Length: 625
Image (cartoon, rainbow, N blue to C red; front, side, top):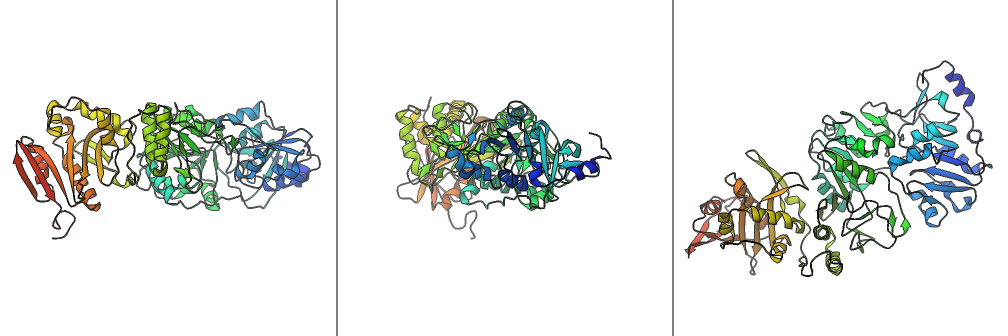
């Protein structure tokens, strides 16, 4: 809209007390309230005091402030309809005094323009600029659609509201009433991550490469993910919401948006929730683009960002990969929000992926969030066909393209150890796995993410990580890709196949007495195993039998040398004093590998086989002579 000299007169004439701005409320009407931390606090307080409010439907996605209209004392005057259930209305929904509309966040604006057109929209704006434009500030999301569609718009003008760039500008001539406010904009301070969240954050960060574009929510896990990304380069952001956690990464040059393929250089979001530090940071900052959710959350728009990584949460995940995120059993708890929007968008993004991140347990560790089947009444937000990756503090489960058996094994491996036997028993009863599926070792330590690393060998980037139960297919593929000579040198017999029992045993480890470290090429989820080294501690507990194999196409690059060195480092920290192994007399590569490992080698040749022993002496690598 073009600016007009009369807008200042309009602003002065229509700036009224809150009760006057609500004069148009009618019985049976519909009122929309601004989102998140942009709740118009004075107007909301006046709403519940207004005598004309009878049988009024109140609409909004989650708000941070108080919700007096949802109190039991307001029954008959207001009935809330939640597009996302926040803590301030959860009790009302639970007692049946408020409604819940399950809906994708990308589709809420269309509903506000068609079936759920508000009679009155209550929003919070920045003061008008020199041309008469106010800004919706930190919440454009579905507020933009409500302002455009509502029959009457009442705006709480607050100098504390940031003026944000994007699609949130509303001219004074398009607002019906104005209410002055000096209330502080609502804030949510970041919660410091605990150790569980930090572990989840490190696992998630390991799935984020340089140049990726991120979608993250609010809470301890998203904050932990951001805190683990300090060594990445040229990350971008396209997210329905942002919080304080991104500021440090922007200021450190980690988030640049330089490699984004859609809105390069811009942090694209629809709303932000955080502290005054964040609000001051986004104020008049052209690096941020605040757009409505029908754009930000549109899966086709999301997919325009190459290397899109979406991180979302869940309440439960069953062993087939079904994700429940909006209810605890039949009890509605939160909402669908943007989870499915971003999971679908990331799936269509070139090099994209989605992550469901959650703690392995709830209620103080007494309840597993990984379950054989979802609780009765639990809703499936993300279907088993859409889920990509699930992360807990115990590891990463890659599910996309996996069979139910593979999914089951992957998810049990990242469940809390206290529940793995119960989950495996449930999986056997439901025929998710074979009846002879071996159990996880008792007392084994969690998957050791700290042992993951990336190294370059000539023109090949190799990711080293411990073997997981869901690596069965990768291990089989490696075995069947070996030449007959390599198989014979590794197993000392002309082995033609591996049994299911053998593969299970090779992939089910305690990471203490039995360790296997593998080398992979390719991106996580599509990676290919090209090498594996393993050791197994003897009964005396002092030495361990070691074996290594490298795919024929990757031999002679130093991968085996590095693999043995890493196994030695791990074994020494585990209190192992040396390695033993058996090497065919003709396997000069393996003999040389032991000879140059940095420790004295003892060898006895009998029947064409070297019985090799290396002992980790004080003068070895990492120790002073």
